[in-house]
Image (cartoon, rainbow, N blue to C red; front, side, top):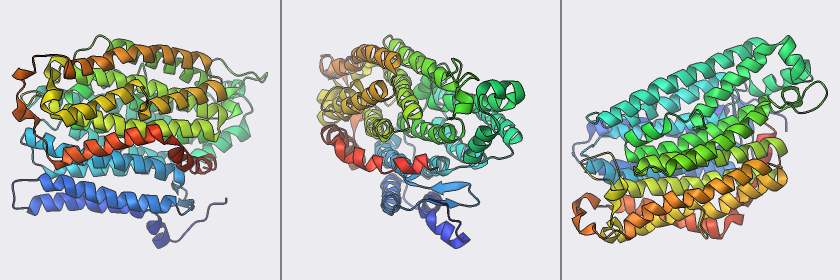
Length: 514
């Protein structure tokens, strides 16, 4: 389908969901400034409602079957971007509802929290809609800056401040590397459009041997982009920031980071590398064989390193947030295997398996962190396994919800995590021929069951729960609704996955066509 350039008003009409996000984020700030009541709980519900309105517009656009390139080919509104925007918004809705109790617990009543969440979602959405390296970078910063601020939300807590500074410094370095790679690619190809970059490389060079001898700047620029994206996806060995930042950041923010930021980074990586570098010129040698040092092969090695690192290091952790942090690293490895499978096959099966995993992980990850935030001791931003001793007996609903999410993480049926992991591994093994990565991922995921079930052992099987302060576990409708929504979809997707696979496949052709 040939792209059609529209007038400025028509183009603005095509990005109504993005415009609404900006308007709602600004509105939350204004409402907070002029509100007379000291209780800001209603802002969480209002934010969730605003995001739901945007989700309705996103769903409407998804059903319209329209793909448009906008603003001089800097953005493309397609089903691929819309389905991931829906995932970001779902994560934002659950965060807004789950944060009401959490912010009350620590006597934090600031509208900036909700505004920053919406601005971060705006940046994520712009990232997945962007087809220009420059607009991708601007969107990346629009996503990252609010997350840096949210990580240091507890300004009186040294761990929170440390997490924010560490994430900011390391994230800035990664962004600088990413930007320099973009500059080199522009110099080598004369374009910042990811489709044109791929076309220029293919037109000028037939294999990677020629590129290395004639124009190595292309490879250097690609490597720099590669490093920047690997940092954002928390892929080993670029995951070093993850456990410390996840531990120090407010728990509700950690959940949003682990789900939405990871999804945005992977989705953008899919579009950029799939359209710019997934071609014979950068994968094959002069004799036609696949280069052993091609970026696909490097991804294979990193995926194996990531699943091993995440699952094995998590075994020795006693801090629940660090356990889930290394768990998130392991899941990044699983997602990387699915990503490699898509790059190799470019078929709807591997693609739908990957996106379904993102959807399942969104509900599972957000639900788990919301439940942990409720059980978190008020005098500390640190949740040890011992802090969960018998906690499920004090809050049966929250305990049961957390158990559902833990089972989903571990891949136990009928939770969505089981089918998503099975579908992902099956498509990667059968369709893409990724035998070694899948086998290693399966073996290490068996180890993961141990550290996941440790959490449930402390929740239900430790008998010193009489010492638990029940006052720390107060919940309002917001948290209950968030846990109910997440728990329902974890079960529903696991039992009826075909409905979602059909929807996801509809977005496949839009990604292929750019």
